[in-house]
Length: 304
Picture 1 (cartoon, rainbow, N blue to C red):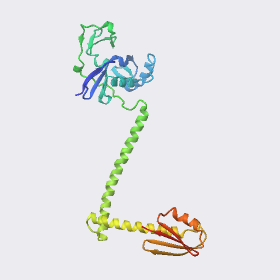
Picture 2: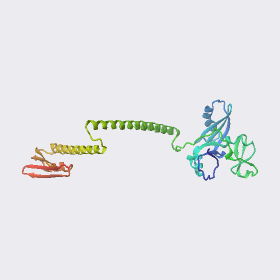
Picture 3: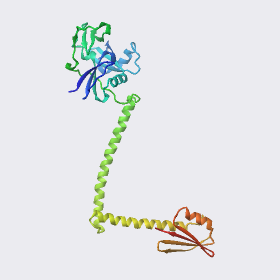
Picture 4: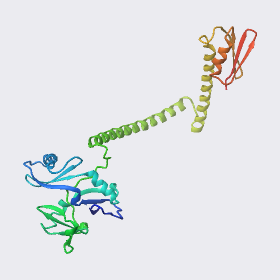
């Protein structure tokens, strides 16, 4: 069971270990009794901002309503951001706060009208059905004390919105929908990946059987690495050939011959622009040599 504390301004609360419920003192909200010719509690709540406009500037306020009887309601107006700021100043982590209650509602059946009572070293009383905090000059030390820890809380409470105050409720809902959609996509993708892994495993086994590959994963990897190296060499060789053959946009002349000597590929050109060809090959290959034999220009590339 969560601990309950009575939140007052300019007070610190130490050793808050577990999650807590908070009962707000009258300092944190406006409250009035309204006679509203509406039976629906939800519709009555929607009318509260308009009703409170006659008494306060409602900008930044949220509203809560308690139905007392038919057409009679107890309306609350509170500034959630101010409440969160006071909670932090009091040394309480906002994430530990479970539910928020109004003292007006929680103490109404415990305090007689016009009878002062002490709650956490301060005097309170109900005047015309509204709980008020008495000024310091009116403190009555002989009044009975109400222990918050012994109170059985009602079902009327609100929960703090832990989104940033710079994020509107509409935006918070949109963000929640985006997160839900992304979570669904991640879940679907995870299932897809698991299915692919199973299929790939089956395909690998089929390939091993069809090509008589060794069963050992180590041996299979070794063979694949050898094949990959061979493929890489082939691709590099093809790249060198392509570079040596496609020179017409660089210089006039003729390709006389192509020879392979070990790891070397030798191109022999006739009546070629040597300067342009040196630039052409040098910007792509590091292991390249140039030589000249009479009218012939020779390019040697070592294919590692």
